[in-house]
Image (cartoon, rainbow, N blue to C red):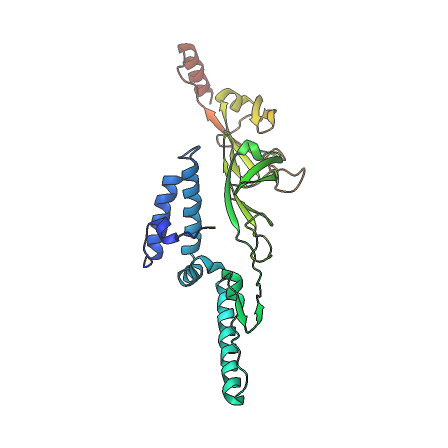
Amino acid sequence: MDFIDYYKILGIDKNATEADIKKAYRKLARKYHPDLNPNDTEAEKKFKNINEANEVLSNPENRKKYDKHGEQWKHADDIERAQKAQGSRQQQNYQDFSGQGGHFEEDYSDFFESMFGGQRTSGSRQSRTHTQFKGQDFNAELQLNLTDVYTTESQILTVNGKKIRLTIPAGIENEQVIKIPGKGAPGVNGGPNGDLYIKFNIVNNTKFKRYSNNLHADVDLDLYTALLGGDIMVDTFSGKVKLKVAPETENETKVKLKGKGFPVYKKDGEYGDFIITYHIKTPKNLTEKEKALFLELKKLR
């Protein structure tokens, strides 16, 4: 994988403050967001690189490792341990050599050889030690409609040229991240593969409002039904239902339909509630006769 200069990606220098990083990220993320660049693979690639750069540079600890070790920043702890061990062994060899006046052999850490593919020889003996590392994790985003996640569905994703069949459980939340083990980059020197992290962007393509597992809807109610009561038909996510309106229902009255909401993530058969808020509409363009009747009602009251 080619080295990515995160500072260059965000258009900032190495002295940039946290505020500078945040500002640059927001500006570029808006510019290259997939919603604003549909079917633009180049914009999608830039958007992913921008997110990756922000994730590293906005984290002070990761930024420090990146500044020091560049493309090998994820292995910073291993590198520093190896350097420390190398220094200890060199010091010991020096003491042995000077104290005994005997055989001296360089004993450099094979960690760097495994990282960069080098090898060493000592006399007629040649050795190479491989240190295993987990492969790089991949991050991806998947945009779905709210109607797509009402039921469990399967989709095939293409990640780095490989097709992955993914089962998406019903009820997944907006911006929820799931981990697919072993679907990242191959490990180094036989180490385990990295993982794939998928962030879901759920677009609400319905007239309902979703809050966790509950769905909310506003329903207009005419004045006469609100006063006298009656039956009405109401749309829910799974179809129409018949509701009985109680006489003298007030404006903003809420009615809960238990179990008619959104599926609960990874809990088959469990659903949230569907909550209706009534909005009473006053009649317009009254006729003279209607006005007279309302006037008569006013006198009675």
